[in-house]
Amino acid sequence: MVHVDIVSESIQVEKVQSLVEGHKNGGIVHFVGTVRNQTNGEPVKYLDFECYEPMAIKEMRKIGEAAINKFQVTAIALIHRVGKAELGETVVAIAASSPHRKNAFLACEFAIDTLKETVPIWKKEVFENGYHWVSAHP
Amino acid sequence: MTIKIVAFGIAKEIIGMSEMELEMATASSTIGELRKNLEHDFPAFTSLASLKFAVKESYQSEAFELNNGDEVVILPPVSGG
Image 1 (cartoon, chains in turn green, purple):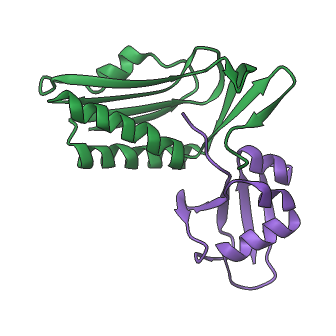
Image 2 (cartoon, rainbow over the protein chains, first blue to last red):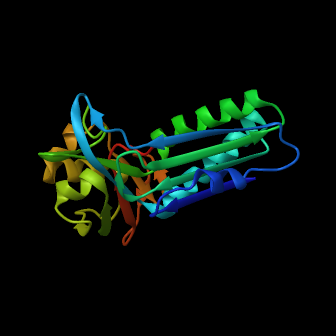
């Protein structure tokens, strides 16, 4: 079972967990991405995410399906925040459930690594004096 | 042939708007040719780490044949998570 969503309000990790729960499972692994307060020593004020939503949903679903095929997890959920996010807030949450823990760890790592490469979401880091689009330039 | 361009993130800033119509000189064209046109009109695109394109909500290769009226989404390097 794959659950994906793009949301503009704060992400509740317990709700993401509830999407993947079930008695088949012996473990649930989460990855939770939060807003860090600095980049290369420069204080970050907040993040602002843009998203091409219909394609992002499709790409996130593909990742979930690939994770189930590769790692035989029972269920996986991928939720990403868009818009403005303050320091410490959750911007991405992934949960994978599995009869045994190892595959759930592997599925979570695969999902966040692939999300960062393929899902059309763009992160703007805003500093005291300006901003930049993360990863835009080599 | 007219192509509708939709841009996100830094690509939106480079073209100065989120959507525009682009007139292609030829009756048929590929994503690769569209890329050359864009890089010619907006040289800042050549400084990006990558530039990808989507049609119908899926990544498309340079060889993808465009049709009149197609909507092409410009995807600068993604940075979710």
